[in-house]
Length: 431
Image (tube, rainbow, N blue to C red; front, side, top):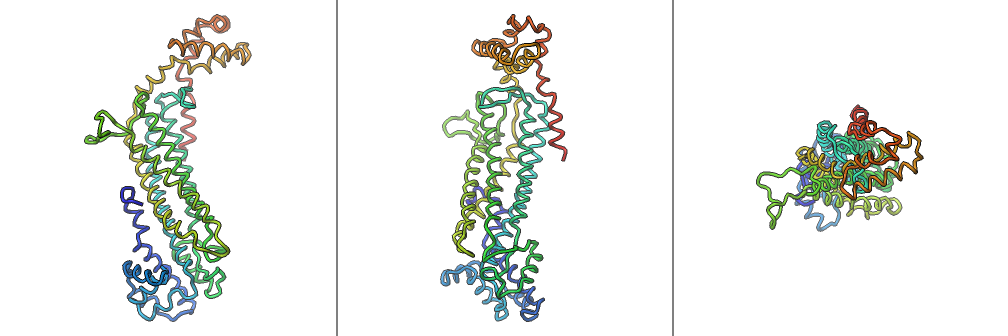
């Protein structure tokens, strides 16, 4: 991932030095187990650990010649650690190290993403509670529907990211497995107890059946989850972008003192952060199909998944970390304009009360079809003429012959649409 969208903590997980450090941790943990079970001589781990040095540049030089990353790594360690290093990797295969390392990197990245989501959840919750009863128009198909509150709108995103948190927790657990089972996964040259020891030491679960690789359906779930989270980010970003349009302007991204919106038009304040999030979401989701296609490897293994994972592992987790962090800042600093929300509510002169009138007409004896026809006629006329829907209703004899005006007036009450908001909040925030 390019520097522009990389944050240090998660980026460091994918740096070469850290990857090689994890490789060495895996090799030393396996060697510890082999010492414990008297498969290799005592003292090997202590000697190797004291002398071994990670040198990414040297590993790269060796790999240029041998065309194999694990062999290059082991050769580099042997150059520093000496003859005892011959006991490293005993009975193991490259995928034992590569796959276990990859899962550790995914787990660590996932844990950072969980922290990001928790910060975002707090920001959304704060806005939801603050605007619990801030009236705004609800829209379906982009068209005014019935009143809701801005807090309720925020609450939908809060619940969605709670679900995303749970999905990610499940996916981290799914991918946190370890395989130290040797070529084609039969343990022919390595004791299964070594695998169990390494798994415990590295806080992973044993992979029950690993062939020569850890099954990629686990990784497909992990990256699919990241794709879902990205889609939730985009849904939020698109909502902000729509609500910031000049003719709507119910919310607005924060605009810093010295910020410039356009090279040509000094008046512009564009929703660039939300637009950027939409773009990042597309990028993150692009990893899902390759991750799914990685599931279908040949027989006990091939390496068609390798190039894919070298890219989507760091790029997708780093991009999502950046995106969640950016969204949190957008939500925290969001400018909310209740007066504009009220102004937009009034644009249609109350026609959004149409359902209340419809239901009341059915209560006094009209069929639903009759009620719908009467109300629709008055609503469309009010909308076309830019006149009061209430005045149209109280002027319609078919209606007033059945319902007194003072009762009709009560149907045009905003509090009717907010009376259950507290119930929704209570059940949504109970945890």
